[in-house]
Length: 179
Ligand SMILES: Cc1cc2nc3c(=O)[nH]c(=O)nc-3n(C[C@H](O)[C@H](O)[C@H](O)COP(=O)(O)O)c2cc1C
Picture 1 (cartoon, rainbow, N blue to C red):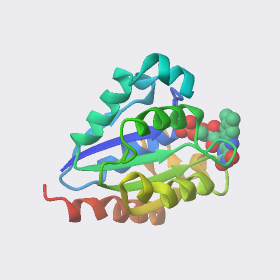
Picture 2: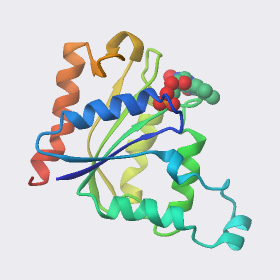
Picture 3: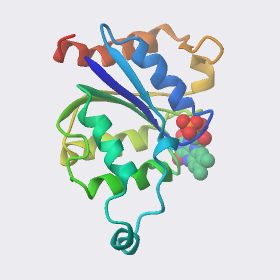
């Protein structure tokens, strides 16, 4: 299974990137490819810029990475209860190539934040809307209190209960897609 994993954040020290990297390591038999949103930075979307720029190569490249994968693993940063501007901007551009941004791939959606809700609002928005964009969400999990529950130095969850939940969530993909 080719698993494409990324954080929906453009922070260099993204806690969602740390989480998604660890989560991907728990996927049995997966060939993991990590993607960085900073490599897909585009001008702020507007219909006027779209008229000028057409379909940017970077948007096509991002869609191609999804096309080449068997499954997706995304961890969402929450900004004011919603998506980071970096993710939403890229998503808007890519949605203009094809509304099925997720291309009928099975996917697991995660979120984390330092707060008590762990990005539950952005995760709800992402999971609720995914089917309209060709996303088949098999599991989702918000990890609250990132700095309490994640060992940043070792790059792993230290909370055993959350670790089990995360492994189960991620392996809902391995069950679906043969190695
Ligand atoms: C503009 C802004 C808005 C934020 N809003 C929220 C929020 O609504 N809920 C939350 O739990 N954390 C919020 N945070 C804190 C983020 O969860 C925290 O910055 C986290 O590190 C973002 O994930 P990332 O490191 O993967 O980018 C906000 C941070 C910023 C900079």
